[in-house]
Amino acid sequence: MSFREKIASNRFVITAEVAPPRGTDWRPVVESIEPLRGKVDAFNVTDCQRSMVRMAPLPMAKLLKDSGYEPILQLTCRDRNRIALQSELLGAYALGIENVCLMTGDFTTLGDQPDAKPVFDLDSVQLIELASQLNSGRLLNGKELKGKVDLFIGAVYNPFAGPEILQIWKLEKKIKAGARFIQTQPIYDVELARKVSELVYSLGAVPVVGILPIKSLKMANFMKRLNPTSVPDSLIEGLERASDPASYGWEFALDVARACIEFSGGIHFMLVGKVQELANFIDSVKNHSDYSGKF
Amino acid sequence: MVTVKLKPLEEILSSLSNYKKVYVIGCQLGSARCKNGGLREAYRIAGYLELKGFKVVGVKSPGGTCVLDRIDHSTKSIIREAEETADVILSLSCGAGTQLIAENVNIPVKTGVTTLFIGAEREGRYFEEYCIACGDCVISDTGGICPIARCPKSLTNGPCGGAIAGKCEVDPSLPCIWYRIAQKMEQLGELDKLRRSIPPKDYSLSVYPKKLVLEE
Image 1 (cartoon, chains in turn purple, red):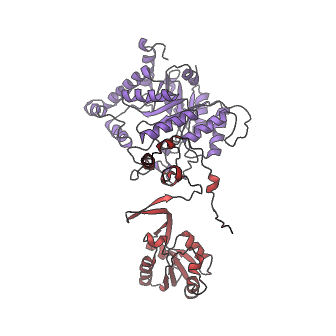
Image 2: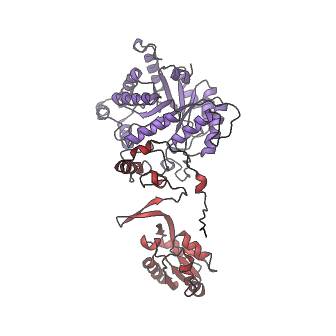
């Protein structure tokens, strides 16, 4: 069953992030996720995340697809104007890539090519509207398309950003514009994951909660600097006490992931490092009687 | 106002290195208000140039160097005087004023400033960019606060996911302008207006060079 069919039939989905290589060597990237074959429903292919130059996400998504994985093409507004975004999405669909996750994108100066000209012709809401317009058979300018487009559109949500009401309204705008699934920033608190999931469901989309295992206290503090309220004190204290912080952080994240199966639409693993462990975790929950029928 | 910043003195010196007699022209509008190119700074630069062996043949700072009538009046023309007495003009006016001088004289014109932005004075100490002259003003709908100029991504549908703890992800020393917009719209009882989806901006209106034609 495809990612889209699973979402449509209310099954719990598991997605994970794949970053294209810094260069052309794509095979090791594809080989590294082999243990997740048949376990992760779809892989988000990032679009020069953190504004770092990497291989373009569309060819990487196609390479993943050809290797038997289902991709979710991430596309940002940072580097492409509305002409480029339309042509990119048309190209994606022609190559058989249906799933897209559309976002505004990080700013140029935060990455490793800070001298680049930032584009931001559209924002995330407008990009989602654009994709929906393509789905309706027309370009943004109203001209009719040759051949159909049927993209399955997703978007992102950061529950730690503000002002809260404007973030919620922006999420509402994205869903009204056609986003069917919403992947969140990493969440380490079950109650927050529940609240966010309820919010997304209430607005008419399927929540997919971001899971990012913390490997060390250093990483936790880095995350805290980026997003001060996102890392709970209990996690920091646990990492400080733990003899093996990496496995503490891993288990902590998996506890949140497990809890999400009860009330959310899916989980999204970011920066997959422990691929085999993740595969084992997915097997354990999929085979667990508590979750039978969920997947 | 148009905000400018004096270039480093070494850079100014280097641009004048092939010349001897310099005429310094500032501007009493933007350049003087932001204390980077008015009469005071023009005299300061002139003194420095004299120290470095240049002959400064004139120092003027009209009230609006980008207005031709102010620099080339029929009875008293600053640029004619400069042209007759100097090898080179050093302008401390914004890019507009400096170009207007350059296209009306036959001697070289060098700039002593970089034009930064259209901004407002804050607390008498610093200036902030308020307007990028996009050609399609939206601030009537955003509490009089411009998200095009004051959000690095020019977002019109609300803040991005990097707006953490009121700060802008691009420069955490700056507030995310959407917090100010929300606060202002709430005060005005118009917060709900921010719930509407804003269509893509028409960037054809932003294409430069723009032109304003006065109607007869």
